[in-house]
Image (cartoon, each protein chain N blue to C red):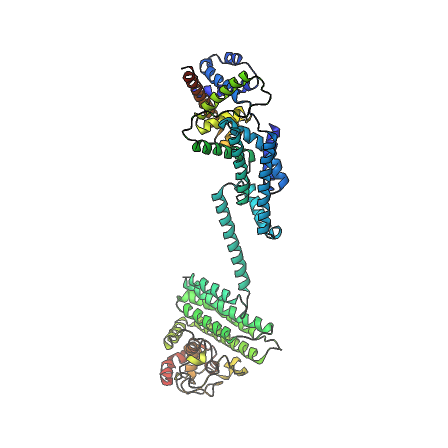
Length: 404
Length: 188
């Protein structure tokens, strides 16, 4: 009823404003007329306020002048405070126009939210661009630490063993590719890169040893192909490469080849692969050091192995000499190892050499953060002969003990 | 009405260039008389209305200077600020119930008796208006003197159109009661 009267009143007021007489209007709404009449009277009484005396023109002009002078002052203060507003102000002006277009200019909270969203988007975009740029960086680049950090974060966020092993292997191969790219660019290779590659490779194999037989076999099959492919790629040394670069590439290729052979052997004898990794773990449980020559236990490496910072340019170290070593069914016994004439008798055990290819080498890698010439020399004769490895495994304990 | 809508549309564009002296002068020339009258009808004092109108336009400058952007619907924004300025004025003049003297008489008014009568009537209506709630008063002023439609009033008050119609109904009823009571007091 009241809402009906409200609507009728609205229509009646429109007719009153159009000049219709109140009596005619009330006649048009006979049912609501009693309630409508006082309302129309009140509306008519308002006419007493219709006329508004305007102030004298001079007063109005003076007020106008004062207002415009104040605005001019503000405009000048602005231009003094921001002389380069034409250049630096366009993003702000654009942002303001955007706010106005979306009707947010008069809503402080909505403006704040929109600004925060924009800032978050900018941070994400710049961060993503930085990460992408860092992903292609090389050692020595300012973005390279970002790349390493992002890798560490990725590793720490990967709880699954298989995925983590994959990631370690991928990172080892990434380090190898970095060395190849550095060589192609004619830049020197930092020995730390080689150490990092070796450390990642060891971590990958160590984690893979925790897999069951079926998964281990599959993983090692894939790893073998990738390792050997990468080793072949590293052997394509640029002809104009410096001797130190050449040496590092050869060492890296040899290490990858050796790991590939371990992977091949591990597919056939997963249990032995695990034992080798566990022995390598117990042989030296210290984390990978930065400089291998400083941490190699003298008892295990009596011969001064060349450090990575002073590589020995020995092509023989990276050339597999498996053909020189014939698979021997001999279970144990000292036997001179091809390619390692200078080694101590314990590390020169033939079967120890096979084992060294796994645990001994691991011990070297883990302890030294990279393979030493001596360690590799002990590895080069064993090849991938399963029978020889079996024999070597049996003799390993004695050989190791003897070596120590 | 179409002209008015076009004005509202162009307001935001002009508002963006409010530091431009010409645009600012144009806005002032167009809206100052409206705001002055709107305020005067409530306060009934020319000097006070001029001061309050100046405050409204100073507020416009401050809003622009503070970087909060210029009002999107300038006329609605100006009426809203003027409305608040009048409320503040009443607050400052609180408990002051005397009717202001009309010192600025229309120039064409030549009959002193008629002038006094119309002044008295205006003062009575103004006193009755001051008895309304601020929203009711604003609806009355905007609809009856500024020629705003229900939709425009709703924009100024930030209320739905239905609420504006209800406010209008209650405002006229309250005004009638206040006028009747005022006449009763006057006749006593």
